[in-house]
Image (cartoon, rainbow, N blue to C red):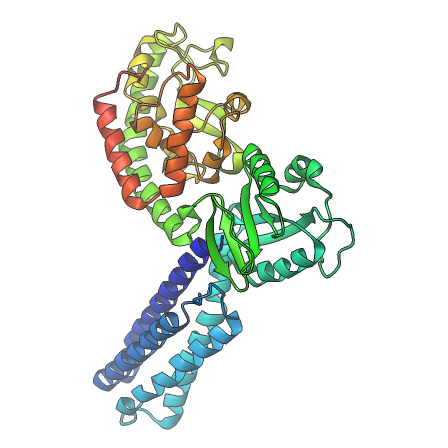
Length: 461
């Protein structure tokens, strides 16, 4: 639950702090060399100070890791103080080279200004990055299920990790509506779960221990049906349930029903960087030329708009409009009905576009806008979601952004869905992608897709 986010967040904070110090010191060296003309001594000073601060930050990260052996995280204030003073006073060793060039007052001003920079980096940078990485779409609204005392205890754990985007909105279950020790509002029993999820925009459910395996199975079914993450929280003294991946946090163990490598912000940054690197040239050298060519041919074969926008479900089952080249004649027949082989609605040039998947090129605009990724589960028609959701764990695919291509597509799952087995196979590949994502997998899938554009498989039409 916390591990992917916490470790990725700590790595990004450490990298950002080091980059900030090195960048600021490089600028300061250039300024002071220009004004005071003491390049040798001052450069040596800044070099030593840079080394001292970088070593201090590295030692603090290795020592604390912001993640103890039992999985608990130390208080942020202690981490900040420890790192701040360790780095600041280690910098004192670098003052000697500049004493022969600057007065003691100048040295004190330099040291204080750098200490201020260090304090700002440790106090403000983690908060700013936390807001940037775990705000809005990546903030999890959590419902805690269990007895009042356990919920209150667990609420304190969640509050200590609020910087990672976990926001408790209420509790359910328990024998009483009293909030003994818990400030969370009570939303009733499991019978009101679906209504609460839809009204409160719940992303995650935490079962606060003390539940039987049959109850866990029931909650798991309900969560999968609604596309909500399920976590089981138990004390160390309680036996762990099977079928969950466990991690420790203080005196609690958290069991996740689904691995999500893309919960790590560093993985999300890498994936987003790959998306932008692919989308920008694809728009410049793919979408624009093909759009011009398509517009010219459409004037003769099927007059109408070049682009077509369809409503699809994206991450978190939120709707968005996907861009495509229009491949069907304009009219009511363009309704949300899957295309079939030799479909009469498709005009001649569009059949070639669809066979080579070039009708999907405008979706790189969705990628650039952050609604889609280059690789991910393909978004389905909104009208089909209810039908496809009958597949077990179907909504797990909504935990990540939808993609232009995906693991299912390069394995032949494309074209018309004729039966439940076709949909089951697609969902299985999508879930494998969600749970086993890595950057190399995305690169491989992009390369395989590029080859299938040149040499289309039989299922492409």
